Image (cartoon, rainbow, N blue to C red; front, side, top):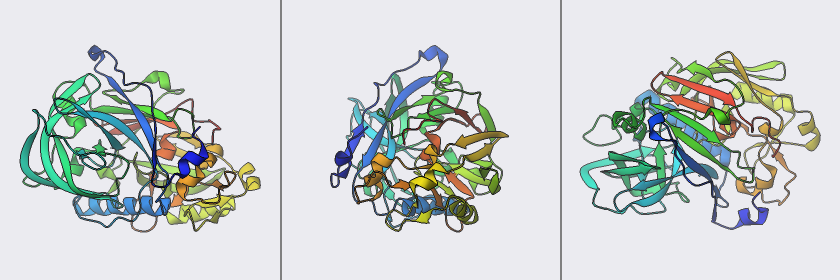
Length: 403
């Protein structure tokens, strides 16, 4: 566990290093790359505001088809999972935020792009808004290396201006290719990294397996499996559900689900999205108010999160998400923010016994829900472009009590 005082260093970033990058032999058409969790210890004003702004921007972008509109920054997420990506020849490594709700890959935030022998400027401009952050710059084609794979002529945005990405070098966009529409001048859409892995025959299927180890664990890492998944990390069969037909969630990794708290339904079947770059679990206002009342929580103005007492924590009931006919349950421990990391979300009291819930109000005019990485840390997830579906399975961390 990271020492609490280390997380309080002003404007500092702590990188939890995972195991070395490794790959499964190419004849299986799968490649596995390790992830790391990056922590932002100060400057965070309100974690909920940032997630809500992102959800509203994604919703509006899908409705209008404009993923390139500028937006003012309102917040920066305190934690995100990053992947080390090699770019160019000679190769230089960049730490990029893993984002399933965007399709563009870009660099130039904490670390500038280095032009090498494989870099080709297209003369096009590129601009993407994420609601709570944005970037604009120029498009290059370059070689991207993931473990033993080298993807040629990959479209990369090189930031000339950006907001909201301190602590990472850019974004690794692994959402649907339609999310790149209109983001690059003189171009309709641009192939994503997942597209090119498939088109250049590095994978047989356009499938991504995502495994996050909860940030409260001593080794907060995970893996991305390109072209498949790792069944050894699962403790159940995979449940698949098709991409929702409901707009605008259908433009993302959108699914239908219902949510119950104990025996009470708090969200009937609704469409929402699964997003690795959102922190919390955001749900519709009516459902949030029902959950708040049922748990007895109060809204903490400093963090924007629901806060409960230790007695209320001991009385928490399971929070169950029914997806594709299967129940995926968050235990009481899985419903709370890691107490040893309270300073990361703006709790300046220094009291690691304060208990905050990870379920928040999504606000108006947006999706029915957004399941962020605090949900995905408890389950293995599969993003299957080939079959237009999302899969989930339990892991060894589904019932972990490390929070």
